[in-house]
Length: 192
Image 1 (cartoon, rainbow, N blue to C red):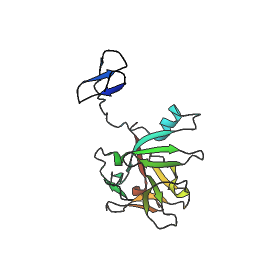
Image 2 (image 1 turned 45 degrees about the vertical axis):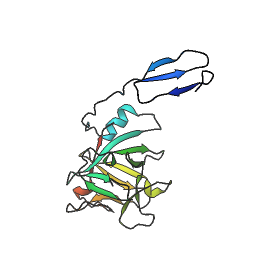
Image 3 (image 1 turned 90 degrees about the vertical axis):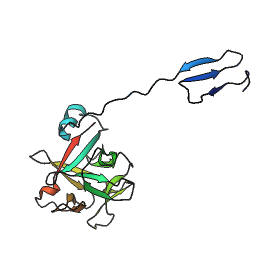
């Protein structure tokens, strides 16, 4: 590169050499990345966070872990994207951490942080929960109904069926009526 051309040269060094027309090179240090420690999740009911931080806001975004009240296992998308949702230990995985985006009608889209895909019930009711783009389908939006014990029933807006873990632990998440079963009640733990 000649002195009459501007450009960047960086061969893995901690400095970047900048050449500008008819000037001497200027060495600019590259700053080290900032390491921010990840703290333990804070178990705060979603409604409390909304009441305290989001009143009057039309844009409520929460990052959460969703865990059933019976087996204490989390909703988890596949480690590798495969259109499925599982019921497992979270183990700090980003595919077990979900982004709740509140809609105007009070429902939520629920997308994992790893793949950016959402929880979606079948277009035609089939008892299954999928991991897909919402594409503005009613079966991809969920109502969070708070219970007296601060758990939530999570029900889609199209079929009126809810997320339910297996009656006996089986690694699966179903789309059914709750019928008072603890495996249909979910703790929503705000992590950010």
